[in-house]
Image (cartoon, rainbow, N blue to C red):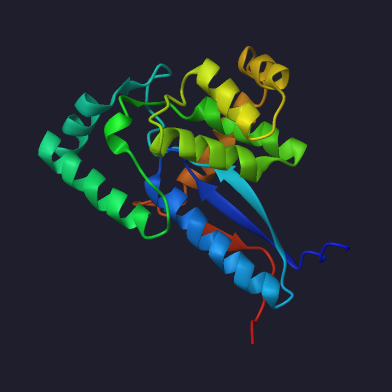
Length: 200
């Protein structure tokens, strides 16, 4: 059976350490199923945004970083609990207690960019989100990125070769800065539908 021809593309601007983006991905997937039943098929493209653009390349201890950012460990814990409860309503099982690092996400976005060139973005984005929020993986670590990228469908040699170089780094940085200029205060999920459609 031939696949339905896409009627538009949905551009998603997100960071892989943004919990609301993963939750939003589940809502988007549900919406796409409904639209598909109406004969409206969309492709999805993922674009980079960094919640913490000034994060050191090696990342930071998550507990200490969040105390500095939110004022106390208790406040951080409360926020994690609320996010975990919200995620559960979409079928996601977050384990925020497993997170020990707040990573710099530039390399993760480079891997996602590579996945886009290979037509495998959704699988890689899902693997990165799941690895971070459900398993507590340090997605700033090259070995972890290679493993999760393979889970998402990429070839390991392509990922390790990318991360051993600065390929795509400049373009990714420019894209992050461009979207940063949108002055998004709280990034939940920003979706731009490139085709204007009126759904009856």
